[in-house]
Image (cartoon, rainbow, N blue to C red; front, side):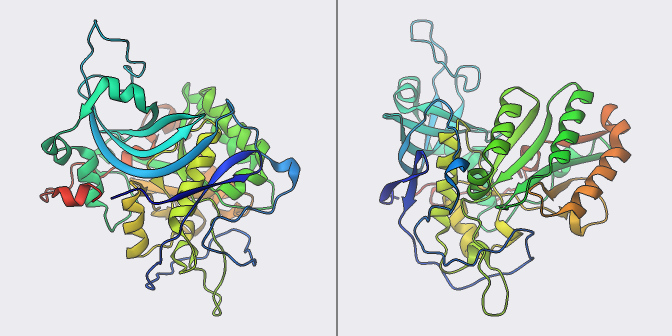
Amino acid sequence: MAPRETVDVTIDDGPLLTLLSQAPEKHQTSRAAHPVEPQTSKRTNSFAKPAISPDAEIDHLAGREITNYHESRSFYVIAPADAADRIWEHEADLPGNTLVAAIRHFMMNGERTLLLVRDGDLKAFVVKEEALKRHARPARDQEIQNSDFAKTFALTRERVIDRIRDDITAQPALSFVLTVDLCQSRRTWDQDLFDRLLALSDLLGRPLDVGIAITGKWALRHKHNFGALKRWSAQGKLNITWINHSMNHPLRPDRFGNYHFLTDKEVDLRNDVLSLEVLLLENGITPSIWFRFPGLVYDRRVLRELNDLSLLALDANVWLANAARITDGAVVLVHGNGNERAGLRKLFRELDKHQGKLLAAETEILPARAALPIGRSDAPLLLSQILFR
């Protein structure tokens, strides 16, 4: 499929992307209200710069300028190391014979750059296009069809992921993924939540795994908190999986008071998703393949659109504010944006209850990749299910 036209605009002190909208289908599914502050301003299909004060700008890392950002899906296999060849700078992460999917093409500081996804754990990496071409060959059809990437995205074409894979939960007795949503909010974030997570990292002697589902509007308003998360990640104090929670997290009730979030017919999902990726890249963060739907609201149309963007929908089967406790295999959701204390009180009680077992490795908090549904699909795959046409 040919890349869609892109238009560059500027937001605050860095360029951000505005993408042309697609006409959405009318089918919508409403699931739950979300603990964020409603916005009453009218949304348009193009990206709208959030209304924030000048002192809420983000300090960019390494002066990254991202332009001409668009999705793709092409596959390569890294060539085996050759002593006569120039050194492959990504050898440690992308060794020879590794299959990778290039899911984004863009210009970074004037150089053609790719966002690559490594087969297997589907971890993403930022790589210069010229370097990849020197050290990789196009993947063959059979290699693509046999890849975990292809199987995963065929399996999740119209479904979300909301629990750890069964073969992982067998040991220890309790395993779960912890995710923290940071939806737009004028309130101060929950510092005590992050203090608890940092303290637990110290007790464990390793960075705690946590998924941060971040919105662009929250990052733009709370630059110091966003900066703290970036520092803790860079310093190895928290092992953060950056989950795309959309740029704008659209909140506009219909005449019955229901929120449809990204299933709203006037919302451009593609723009909201890719704009957040650009913001992360400008701030030195590599986007992951994980996406969380605002309000946990989605329908068949938006699931397909997300799949076409090579992203996986990470749902939550334990939204702790509405649940009694953490269960084995759960993907747990709490909010750290100051809007949902009830969920945090339960989380703190659960962490206190399980702290001894966490230290004894009888309970584990796992990264989001533990929820990858690899190995659960035996359905035959067609290249039309995998490749853009």
